[in-house]
Length: 169
Image (cartoon, rainbow, N blue to C red):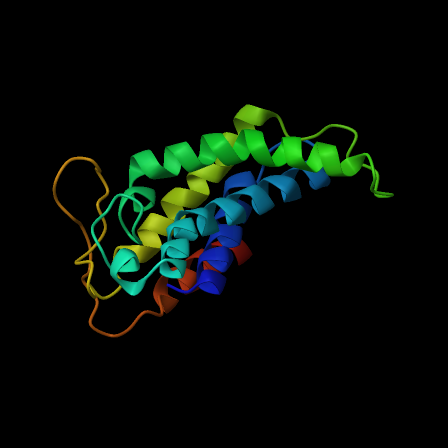
């Protein structure tokens, strides 16, 4: 899937997750944004393309579709981003004219939302064509890859449609 597709499926899944939660709409919308960010996060390993095509398509833990495309990788990303990004935002807030929300999203909720987004990302990558990676290593560091079922292309329109229809229902 492409980054816009991952972000859209994350936002749609986040909308479904926060439906019916108590609290202010701003906090619920913030959780949707954290899920969408979490859905983008596993592709941070695409930065390996900056080093070389061999690294990007390789089998090193930092290559694309290796560690960060696993359950463990999503958990690490959720924990790191759930703590680091609010700290970064807090440091920027001192110079920003924008007022922070009165009650920010609790850190546990942020981490869970980011992890849920990571799971949405993995679900979206499972049916995509195997390509050079032959699926994703869901249980990294254990051997084995899952997915790579589709031969239609990289667009995962069915997942986007189903999440969108459920969010609008």
